[in-house]
Image (cartoon, rainbow, N blue to C red):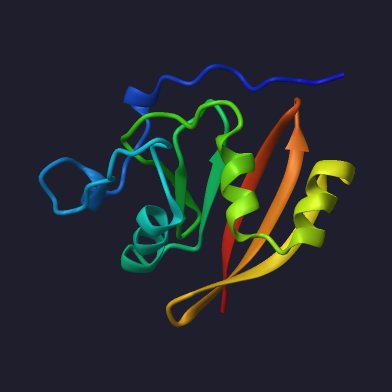
Amino acid sequence: MCVKQKSINYDDLPTCHSLLPGNGILIRQQSMPYSLSDLMPLIVNEDGDAFHLHDQEAPVLETHRKLHYVENPAFEAGETRTMLRSIAPPDDFNDAIRYGLALFIHKYADSEFQVLAFKECDSLRLEFRRVI
């Protein structure tokens, strides 16, 4: 049985100050609304701890145990899987698809991130957590 989360009114949720329009960070629009080259600088520049990616939801930046929704479109169905395929070692990607769980390290600039991929409600969720 799959339990879905309650719907969220995104207008009532906090956002990072630098993610607001006019503050210098713009997510480029492309075939997917987000790419890692767009998202990774956010976590580094905002001194973030993690970001969470879920199909049908906007990305969430976690800073100092607070969650901030990025003000841009939600991922569409299958886009987290596409993103995972672009960065995961083949065995880890296959584990995520076959068994519903994978964990690996992704490097960006001078930082390392632990990437957790898991299936939930027939969707793939990704968490990028900074390794300190």
